[in-house]
Image (cartoon, rainbow, N blue to C red):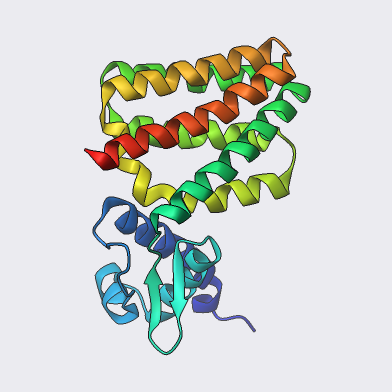
Length: 219
């Protein structure tokens, strides 16, 4: 018979994974840091079992990597890794925008417009934290509406790899507005049924994001 503690493990592990991810994205756990199961368990008030499972979840998403005989570490990307991931993201996002144009429905149009409204409001008050999360939702929605689970899975892996590079970029109002203007162009092309333009704008948007990030890193 399954014990109550065993039934709770997946929920505790998922919660712990979200918290560890938050610590990594906020910089509290730096790239290249070793994940200490005992310390994390004590910090979160749980046993080591959920922490161990949470780290496995994060390893599956590419955020954490195993180093033989040393343990699990927060992934540390090289500049080359970052640039290559951006290029692949651009290709996949362009593909997803084209597919979304083909599978658009009134409900999906309304969801995209609602997200655009929220992003415009966040950009207006220079709320970089909220805009960052809404931006992720926007890209996720385009991938979801592409109706291609493999594309969505691959895209998510590349996004997870790039979080540590990208988060600080959204702290600048002018760049948020520029990014959101690109989102508006993509949505308008999708709504117009212009498959080619939607794909081109989506691909250009990711590549423009790469250039904005490079400019930030050079400052």
